[in-house]
Image (cartoon, rainbow, N blue to C red; front, side, top):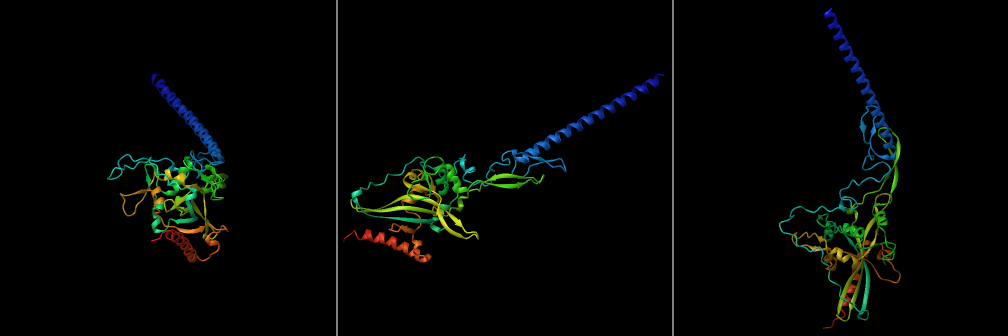
Length: 352
């Protein structure tokens, strides 16, 4: 009798354990099903423009479609994928934690350039205005393309100009003319450099649903290969000196034909050079001949340490050289003629 009772107790215990395991399994299955349904709902919402991942219906796994994640949801402007983008990672300068060099850098980043020699209106007895272009692909102009980052930011000229405008240190002017008549806002500058915001349809790789996605082209500083300079040559009879003063500087972008060939170059924006001089004085220029001896960008322009060619002189028709000379070689010869004319006029003032 006692043995039968023990057997019945064991059988009841086993039965209760089996029933409890079955209930737990059913509860766990319901929880998993509910979790998957919630994840699928979140995935569908993310695919429709709120960002996040989606659930693959075949495997039940979570996947993140291209262009839609927590940082860049669908329907927003994606973050730049270029580490050298001037509107992205380059905004924050990472200073060196050690002395980066054999010699301690003692350059004064707050120094200001010397003021120009004052020229009275009555003493300026002769003058000529010319426009030049600097091609950074020429050997002498390769420092313009030096992609270095120092503790005070990028040392490339185009990045210096753009960051100075964005920080409000100088004002950018619309290239509608070169007389600094129409200021540009930061949004207009961004549009000039990166193009307008556009929307394209992106197909979700899991659901196959097409969703609109906003994008904007990245700006590549290395694509800026030309700069236009507007300058005045003035002879001061008081000091018997021929002065050259840069009035404005403008980076240029290429206008591309549908077949990929370059049609022309046009200014992106103009900057009034006298306002830019204090900014240029803070940044060094790479010296390919001697790494230890460097100048700043203001010295490069004032000492004329660049190669350029004349594209226009002041004339009654307001024409560039290319408007009346089609051959490229003859254009260069015409620019040299204008330069020699300025030199000869100065020399003719002297008598021996």
